[in-house]
Each structure stands twice: as C-alpha cells, then as structure tokens.
Image (cartoon, rainbow, N blue to C red; front, side, top):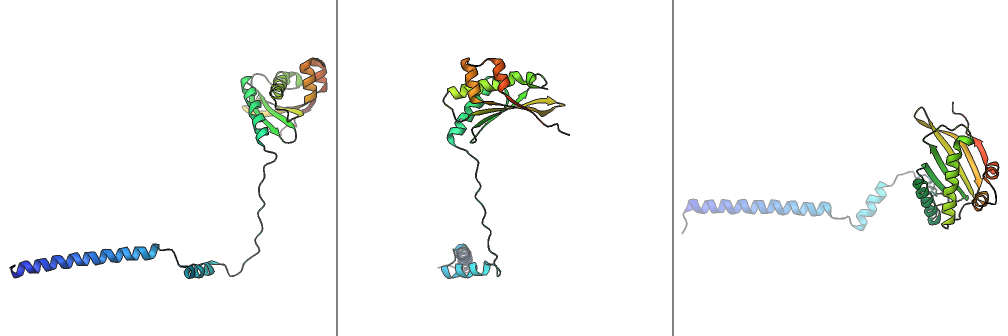
Amino acid sequence: MLDVPTQRTYRVIVAILIGISVVALSLVAMALIVTRPPSAQQAATLTAAARPRHTATPIPTPVPTLPGVSPDLLLCQRQAGQAMHARQMAGAVNLADDHRLTFQWVSQQWPVTDLNGALGGVISGLDVALEVWQNGCTLYDRVQIEVYDREYGQQVHRLTVVAQMSDALYWRTGEINDAELIARLEVRRAPRAN
C-alpha cells in the first residue's frame, strides 16, 4: 500500500496529464472547426454578404490576338535568323502574315548614308531570303531590309530597302544583272530624328 504523500503525488501527476490531454484535444477540435470548409448554406450566406449592393454592368474584355502567328511563319523566321547569324549579320528578322520578310540590319563596320553604303547588307539580306526560300519557306513575296548604323553609340535607322522576291529570284538565276536588280529596289530614306 502506498503512503498518503505518494498517493497525492500520483493524483497530481494524473490530474496534470488529464488537463494537458483536455487542452490538446480542445486545440485540435478548434483547428478542425476553423479549417473545415463551410457548408453549402454558410457558403451561400458568405457569398451573398460579399456581393456589392450596387452592381454595374461588366464591360467585356476583348481577347488579345497576335497578328498572323503560325508555326510555318515561326519556322521560316527561325531559319532566316539562323542564316543571318551564319553570315555574321547583326540584327533581327521578322516574317509577318502580310507576306513580307523584314530584316533589321545594323551596319557594324561602316556608316551608311545611301544605298551604296548599305549595299553589302542589302545583298546579304537578299541572299538570306533566297536561301530560306530555296529551303521551302515560300511564305513571302517581298523582302524589306531596314538599314541601321551606329552614331554616338546609338543605332540610327538610315534606309528602308524593299525588293520583290520575284526580282531576287530573277537575279539569282541570272535573268537580270546586278544593275537591273538595284534599279528595281525601292529605297526610302528614314526621316531624320530631331
């Protein structure tokens, strides 16, 4: 038989353990109640309370669209970019659904003031267009070459040269010579920036 002080000690320890268990079970029950999803009735009440009292007619947001992006255009554009890179041409290329292949060429080694100064990049751009065309990308009928050079550390748009793909093909096959090709190019000077 246990003496009275030992019995008292055991009773206190048991009471403390029961108290800790009750507190722990209460905390678990409160956590379950708080994290439990609301019932359908409670959800309807919360939704109704969250609605504004005065509702305005919502204005539909137009769905954004990208002009003329297709896998074929992207593939041909990538091929043109790779051919440009292979020729060590600095710039960018874009093939749009308006049947125009556009090069933005930056002259790195010399200033461009007229077509004669840009002729090296223009011919390289036409060579790229012909190479991509011969590889099966025949989605364009015009080649546009925007010519840039550097002035005071900035790229400046100098000229835009447009060629019909048919003229480039005639030039490649020898049906027209260099001078005839150059005469058929449409050359526009870029407006001067203020």
